[in-house]
Length: 213
Image 1 (tube, rainbow, N blue to C red):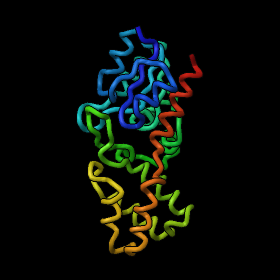
Image 2 (tube, rainbow, N blue to C red):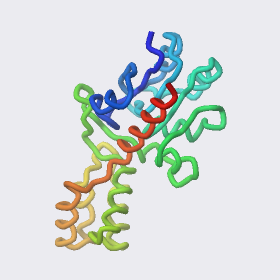
Image 3 (cartoon, one colour):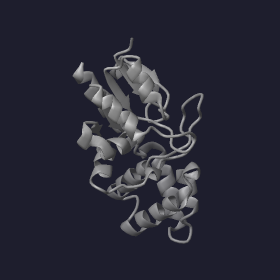
């Protein structure tokens, strides 16, 4: 019986996760997975990644059932952040900046954290909008972009369907608003300076759970 079950996918690689917390790691949660974890005797459930459009998403009622059964449910980073912002008043614990942004209304749509990934390797094949937001902010702070260029690139990213969001696609969609030199400078910079807030929040959540043990 595994007392701690973590639903994890592209937000954080398994090797890094296991160095932080010994737990039973499972793929991104779909509807019914939390019920199964509860029936198997989980005492702590960490919901980080979950499916959005591929299959039915984790239902609020199964989270509520787990909470009523005395299970600690912690959400962060992706689907977990979204559900925690909706259910923290009922006992679910939210961790991380993305959770806080959903909670205070800065983020609303699940489109912010949605991406596509390779189901075998878990590797991300698109870039979630929330990571793009943090990267663009960092680029402004580093003097790579000015405010107008930031806004133009963000508008381009938001216009893309989430499976097609990449930094190159975003830049390609901003040719009328951002000059060539700036676009090239940004792409060179982003190769080593992109912000992965979903990863940061997943790490924070695992460390929080490790401290509960």
